[in-house]
Image (tube, rainbow, N blue to C red; front, top):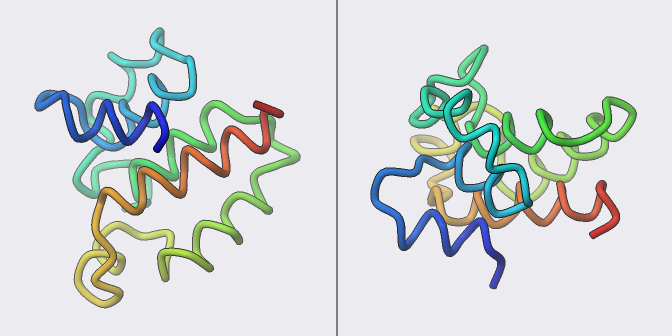
Length: 105
């Protein structure tokens, strides 16, 4: 579907955050986001959501968070995985779509 999901599924060394950034056209953030997957983004936030917020204007963040939570169940990685049972692929797909929409892509 989108480039972020392709990066996530086809590149074994890219985490969810890196995949969203790279898939949305921000490869320069690959190193910075290398430690933001698997619940290690600030505050335990989903790395995919963290990346979406990192690449979009601040005035779009509230809508991105709201849309992400509506589709995944939470903004926190641990809750998404254990309570909501939302797969990481869905988080990458949703975060990238919301980021692209906010960026007008």
